[in-house]
Structures are given as structure tokens and as C-alpha cells.
Amino acid sequence: MNSETLRIIDSIARERNIDRLVLIQDLEQAMCSAARKHFDSLDLEEFGCEMDRLSGRIVLWRNLEDGGREEIPLERLGRIPAQTAKQVMIQRFREDERASLLEEYSKRQGELVTGAAQRYEGNALIVQIERAEGFMPRSEQIPGEQFQPGDRVRCLLLDVRDAGHQVKIVLSRAHPDFIRRLFEAEVPEVSERTIEIKAMAREPGFRTKLAVSSVDSKVDAVGACVGVRGSRIRNIVDELGGEKIDIVRWNESSQVLIANALKPAEVQEVSLCFELGRATIIVRDDQLSLAIGKRGQNVRLAARLTGWDVDILTPPEFERGLEVLESTVRTVTGVTDEMLDRMGALGIISVFDVEEVGEPVLVQELGMTQEMAVEVVTTCMERAKTQAEEMEKARAEQAASAEGMRADAVLGRMRDGAAVETDAASEAAADTILGGGNN
Image (cartoon, rainbow, N blue to C red; front, side, top):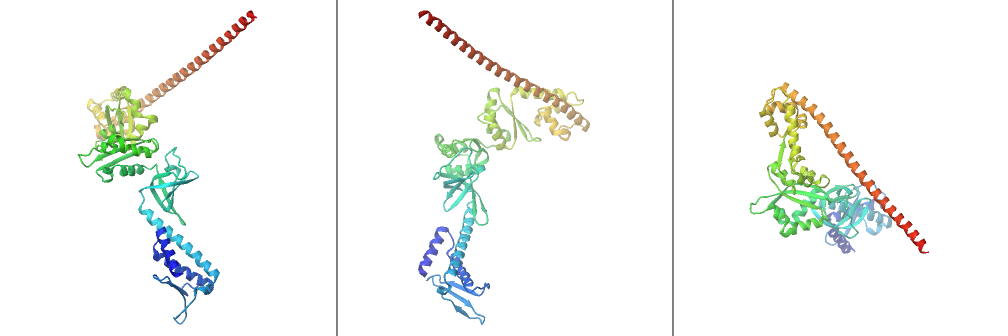
């Protein structure tokens, strides 16, 4: 029986990754609890127990007042204390397992793990990962993605939380680091740090943009990530269920990086306003929709990738903004061509920009007097208000025009339908008349 107990303890220690010595100590304390239960004692020091680590023999004793001790046969405890010992052991084993899970998975936080889908609890997906269950909240799932029980799930071990009686392991497929770990798994140069992912922006399930650079001039960062005939990137896209991935070349120059980030659109010019943290991008009319992307996705991800607010304009819009700014500012006495050129160099390209940057920038950067700066800002604010009203009116007229065109199209279809019905009625009447004549 003693050797059988040791085998059981060894088996539990292996399966649940718990230290064998800890389990033996738990058993010893459980036997002490059973003895206190049997003798109706509250003294924690009255009883002691020791299990031989080699033979498995258990010795239980009672500490006497004279300093000696009285050995207690285990059979003397009876059924009820044995149940107490069993409950204490189960509770302590569970606590040990929880501590073991917490320690093991806390060290693996941020790793890529693979498990099997179990079930959905509410909106959360429960995944079996090795000897533990993890959960993936709705916010960490890829939109539209569904798993059936038993499906393979590859995900990021996002967080490990001590929730009292259990360990909560949070998984994610929507976190940007999930993409980073996939690239490390599929692209050896990334895991070896020959290629570095400098920045990333992601809208899970739709599109991801990565900026990569190489520490080795002989290694093409973009080409290595894509792979021969797109083999490497294809594996990652398949894992993500078809999510688009744009890989762009990193550059220390913000202007070059922003132009790269907006690809596949071709950028003509990039104007940076450091005071506003805004980049104005000039693209041709035929590149405008490509630069903005579906529902503004391309420009939104480019802005997050680069850390700049991105505003996209066509050349006519850009020129119009400069013309309005110049004509407005020139009405202020003392404004020179050099000041206007300096405004353009600072990325101040419209009356709205002057209103935002305020007088201090005009005084410090353009050399205006305080009075001149106040007058320039006031004049631009008034012009900006007028221009905003004009733009709003133009949008309203455009919307009304579009609504009118839709109404005309609906009426046209109704007239066509009525004409078809009239023709059908005429044909039916003619058939009736001809049919009657034949009879």
C-alpha cells in the first residue's frame, strides 16, 4: 500500500507538473488534519506526520506534554477522519496545480500556442492548450471567425491572471503581436532578428500594415517576408483567414515612410506640419480612392503605422488651399513673401492650419510681431468660418443633386414598368378582338 501511494504521488506530479515533495508535504498535513478531527483538537502543533520518501511508510504521532510523542496507528482514525484527510488532500492538490499553472504560463506570456477549440461560453471561445483551458474573449477574436469543437486554434497567449480559485489564461488572435509571432514562426530572418518589424497597424480580419527593416544590407526585408512566389506571406494570410497584409519598407524619414505606408497608391508630395503632427499627402485624382482605401482603411492604417495624422488632397485642392491662405494673409499689413514661404515649409497650407497653430508659432517661427500674429490669426479664423460654410453648402448641393438623380432613376424605372404593363394590356385586348373575330 505504501509503495502504491508513492506511485500515485509520482503520477500526479508528472501529469500536473507539481513538485513531488510538495505533494508529500500536503499528504502529511492532511493526515495531521484527520488526527485533529478524530481527537477533536484545535491545537495545530499537537500532531505530526512524516512519510518516508523511499518506502512510502507513513508515521503519525501525537506530541505529549513531557516532550515525548505517542505513535498513532492509521487504522485508529476511522472513516470520518479519513474523509477529512481526503478532502484536505484534494484541496491542497488543486491549490498546488493552480500555483503550478500560474508559474508555468506566466513565463510563456506573449508566446504563440496551438490548442483545440472546446466550446463557446457566451461570446468567449474556450480552447484546450496542453494541460489547461484558455479563453478568448470576443474582443480578442477575429471578426466573423467561427470554430467548431475539435478545430485547431493557433493563438497568442496574451495574459495569465490569478482569479483566486483558478488561473485564467487569456488568448488572442486579434492582437498585433499575434501577427508578429506568426512572422517569427514563418520567417527565420525575423526570429533571428536579421529583419526587424519596426511598426505595425492592424484591423483584425481586414488588413494589416507592417514596416520592416534589415540590419544586413544583403537581405531584402520585404522580399524575405514575402518569400519565394509569396510562399511565406501566403501561409500567414491563410492562418488569418484571408486578412490582407501590406509589407512596407521602413525609413527614418517620415516623408518617405508615409509615402511607403500609403502604397499601393502613388504619392506625389508629402508636406509635414510638426506643430500639428499632421502630414498632408498630395495624390493624383486617379490615385485618390486607392490612397484612401475601402471605407478609409488604407489611410487610417497608414496614419497609425507612422504616428502622423494623414490628410489626403488632390493637386487642385492643395493649390486652392494655398491660394486662399495667401490671399487672406496678404491683407494683413507687413506680411512678406518670405513669411508665406516659411508657412509652406512648416506645413501650414490653409487658413484652418493658421487657426490651429495660433500666434506663438507665427511669432517664433515666422518672426512676426505679436500684433501682426494676432491680426493674421483673426483674419484666418474669419476666412476659415466663411470657407467652412461654403464647403457645407457645396456638400448639401451635391447631396441634393445625387438625391435628385436617384429620384429620376426611380421615376424612369416606374415609367418603363408602366409602359410594359400598357403594352401587355394592349396585346391582351388585341388577342381578345382577334379571337372573337375568329369565332
